[in-house]
Length: 75
Image (cartoon, rainbow, N blue to C red; front, side, top):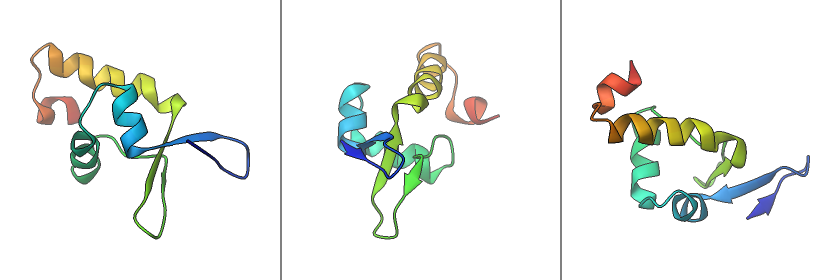
């Protein structure tokens, strides 16, 4: 966990994946296909997610659990 200048708490890919019971590779994949991207991407390649993004990710995961494909979710 890390705090930015505006005191916002941000999570690394590993922390965020653990919090949502995902493999961190899933978050990398979602970012690559532009389905779900981190709030901040640093020049060094590090990705950081905010807790506010959790509802969007949980929505994506729920749709996936209902049987929707990634392309259907993206649409």
